[in-house]
Length: 347
Image (cartoon, rainbow, N blue to C red; front, side, top):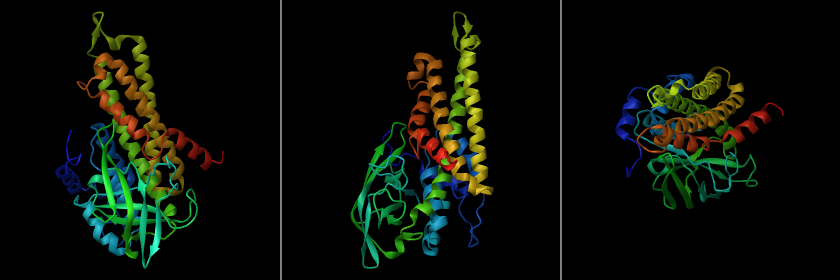
């Protein structure tokens, strides 16, 4: 509480030294990464178990992958090694007040100004935006507010004139930011990817980030379940442990099934990202829909099975419920991803 950053920069650099932070980023000019999403998912699941607040999602997945796939040689040379070493924090400022989960609902405008752009607009729920050294800003250069075409991705460094970042602390104690851009001027070399075609660049980035978030949620639900089962085996009522009651056994068994289904969905999506990218969009939405519902179910049941103490901070279970609420709404909730999966399947 009251921490200026919201995570440990020293610990983040240690994670980087272990190779976790840059696992999906290229190590040389051949664009080969140290590992795949299936490997990083193992790390993210472990991070989810302990509710680690480090900026894997914002920096390693969103900003890092966007620069890997669409960055210019100069952008990649400057930022990717700094991200991989834990020295630089980046983020993607995707959401706007009207957009909810729609990826291409963009009202932020970028107007041509000489060789560069003047950017005006507002972004919300920008993960780790207050701590970022740079932000990737989708801004509309053509078309209507909801059009897929006409969006350009721009790299804006922290401290740019006209850029205002207001930190917010979410219910899960993690940080997001409100970002206001008032005639922020960027040069032509700030464009990431093809001008007007940011949607094509961001789709594979967002799908991989969604799978990464789902892996973290899988870890959180697994730990919350294990904590709950341990409590059922030690808490006594009427002279016996409450885990011996058949009704509570049934509820615990149901949670185990939900977690098993979520694990299968996350594993399939992570493998697809590495070896079958054509299947990734549908599997990413499947994984996020399953994990959004499963983590919330496990956490809510955990609070119920802990009883009154589950509502206090004496036990960790309440923190998993708070994380479930925030993660559910990040990168699309269960309903949005279910609708997307149906559309991709032709329904």
